[in-house]
Image (cartoon, rainbow, N blue to C red):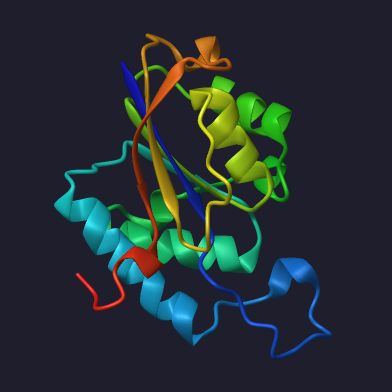
Length: 167
């Protein structure tokens, strides 16, 4: 049994439109939402063995803020270029390389790929994983290289706007 948590980066800033897309930072809402989601995941008992993120600044920043709330070392966060604007095949390629000792994996990436991938894995009908949204998927596999469509069960779908008054 494996647990995969797919998290879309928190809300990013468009204050400096001249910045390359990969360099856009989090805005104030993103800086607020990421630690809140980290606290929520922590309260839910999420304890990642591995965190992998897109190289985009907004995804890395989200990963760092959530990792801090989960007690996961920032220096242990792995960055994978394939997760920047990833499609289903890119997610599968990244996941198939994960060692089998990893039981709980968190991946930070972008829409629309992350929503499409969650639906692919679970045969679910998530319309949109919003910014800083998290889809928790249980996979009945004994090795990450056996990941494929409709093998997952969506165990939770959380996002900041579900908690307008905080946790």
